Length: 127
Image (cartoon, rainbow, N blue to C red; front, top):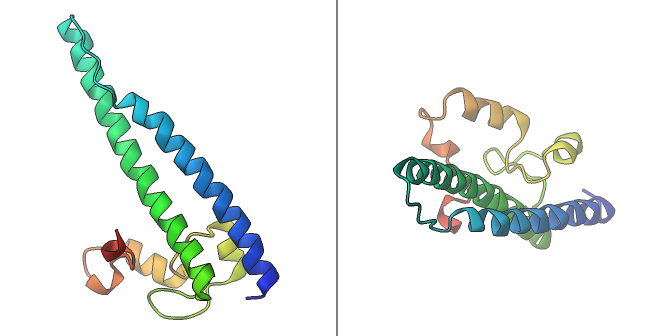
């Protein structure tokens, strides 16, 4: 990967990081406890908070992937599959710049996620 390509991906990832942080801040407001006097309103509030919590987990996971991709750019390892060590094609990185896996490894992982422990996220221990 050329330095120009790496810098372009860095800009894309930094913008995505800022979007995710902004999104997390907005969702955090949804987690505030709202005291409802009506039991039905209370149930709706609990369901809304549950949804917001799951959404926050999704956003946090994406943020972790983006931050790890930025770290890889700094370390000079960006674009290398975390599973097999092959170069991830630029077209894939253009579509999903935070992807730690090449298409082949990603597909294998999605087909049998419970089968192979070697397909655990390379970032599980980093969080």
